[in-house]
Length: 250
Image 1: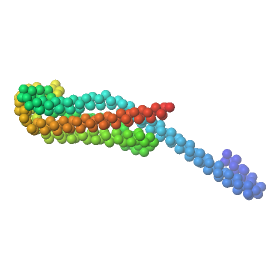
Image 2 (image 1 turned 90 degrees about the vertical axis):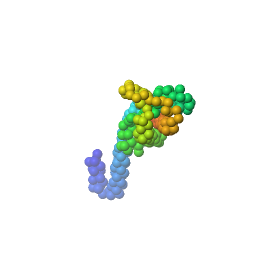
Image 3 (image 1 turned 135 degrees about the vertical axis):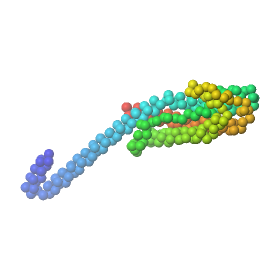
Image 4 (image 1 turned 180 degrees about the horizontal axis):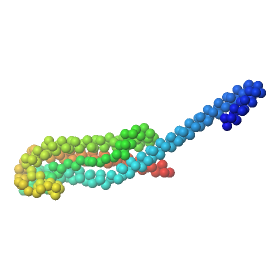
């Protein structure tokens, strides 16, 4: 092709057709520019196709990661609900002002010494964000939901530190002085049964226990609310990813 154009230019010069030569040269330049533009466009199309495929693969993997966590999340949510119910029940028993009912605390006080912390990991979502892929997401709804999910997960995980500090600074010291943990542990198969018996009558008018239980219940309810917000965000993101993948298939 190049030899063909060169032959035409040579013929025009030899025939002394300068004006035609310049017109031809301009036309040739235009053709070359069009060729370059077409090549660039094809390259852009190809890069866009590769990027779309990359995002689609990530969407599918993130969807599977989020969806597969549902059972574990449901179990964790049930555990938090149990702590809320048992700590509230402890306060209700104490508030009865009935010494004969205080033995019922044996079945509820274990929740005071129990804190469930999450160990949920979403490595694919984290990888997607850390590699800067959010900037490639054209769907604003999905982009915002991925960012919100990451923030919710961080807040939810950071709350574990507050629960641990509460246990170390107030709950454990109180147990060490007043309660035989083996008697009240929620899962007593993990501890050795025995030792001095707890005097539940001492809790009849114990302001310190009342406050510790109140603070614990407050923390559990806060944990419960954070968990609900986190799972709601996870459900929204999972649904959005499923919809996007369905559109991609179509």
